[in-house]
Amino acid sequence: MGFVDSGLPEWWWGVVRVFDMNGVFDVLKMDEASGARRGRLTTPHGVVETPIFMPVGTQATVKGVTPEQLWEVGSQIILGNTYHLSLRPGSELIREMGGLHKFMGWSGPILTDSGGFQVFSLSKLRRISDKGVMFKSHLDGREVFLGPKESFQIQDDLGSDIAMVLDECPPHGCTEEECEEAVARSTKWAGEFQEIAREAGHGDDGRLVFGIVQGGRFEELRRRSAEELVELGFPGYAIGGVSVGEPEPEMLAQVEMTAGFLPEEKPRYTMGVGTPTQLLKMIGLGVDMFDCVMPSRAARHGTAYTPDGHINLRNERFSRDEAPVVEGMENYTCRNFSRGYLRHLVKSEELLGKILLTIHNLHFYLDLMKQAREHLEAGDFVSWSKDWIDRYNAKGD
Image 1 (cartoon, rainbow, N blue to C red):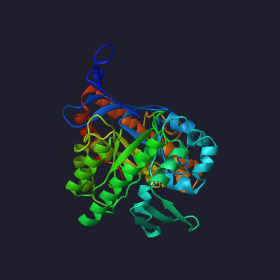
Image 2 (cartoon, rainbow, N blue to C red; image 1 turned 90 degrees about the vertical axis):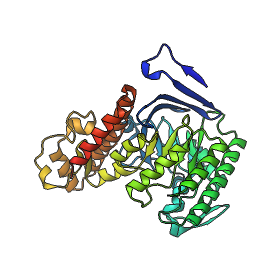
Image 3 (cartoon, rainbow, N blue to C red; image 1 turned 180 degrees about the vertical axis):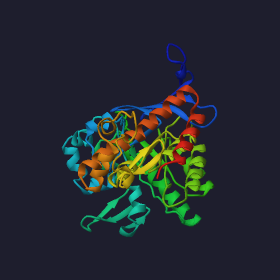
Image 4 (cartoon, helix red, strand yellow; image 1 turned 120 degrees about the vertical axis):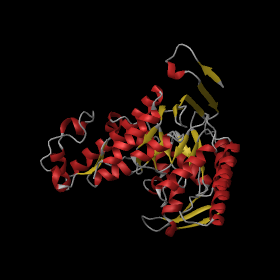
């Protein structure tokens, strides 16, 4: 470890730099009133300022926007999907085409999930064993096996900056015994994945592998999962198995307990969440990274995010509204189009409406993360985030 304490802005003081065989993470500032952190993660394709939100590019594209538009709204890192890309067009083809970055025209960092979430979401199409998961493809019904070796190989083919270990995500409401089996299996797969990656020389070029903590609502299982993964020595850790049907207070409790079991000097990533207010609450619990389909999916259904809550542009009250979605917000949609026009596009099922709202919603999420970073640097994150959440919850549709 080393400390940077001179020649830099005041908020750099106390920086902790952690050098790993797989990368560098800097904790630039800790918030004294909460567990929130301002950080910086170095990857082969660029530096990621945290806290950060990652737009989801399941099929090698973030639906409705171009890579250039992603840059314009402030995207630093995006997410790709191991399971879906392995089925179509196939990871070997993507490797032949120069890797996922070149294939999709995105030069920034990419995180790829492991396929573990599909263990949960495609429960009717798979069989689990200690060796891995046998799926029936949702495209053509053919059987596809995904174990730690296969998950690593796909992600290695894709050339992602951050690869996630294969894990088993137990459903909400599972028994403690079922959850314990999922934790044991996830730890076993994580160790195998890590060993396969090391043998392949993965990480020599700075690429990362993150572990994923499971354990459901059971605190001791969360502790066990986290401790076992920390012992394996990953350069970053994800909090998995949340937002799978449980109410928000239970989800936040799981995130809080899990973050408390993870080392402060490593990045923490809550997978698959959430609403704007949930992101701020989880930043306050010490989480650094997030991903969710919510902003782009909501856009395709006519919903826009504002500091006063989300609004449904299908509503008649917006038909003559000349204001932008958010006054003064610097994105292409808000600079050029009115709520009235956007409502017309939404009601007419015009593709442009989905595109423009996706641009706005992604910018809204990414700008919120930028504001969080600024207030962490200023030292007033707790009061600012409380006021922001109160305003958001007080209004909207």
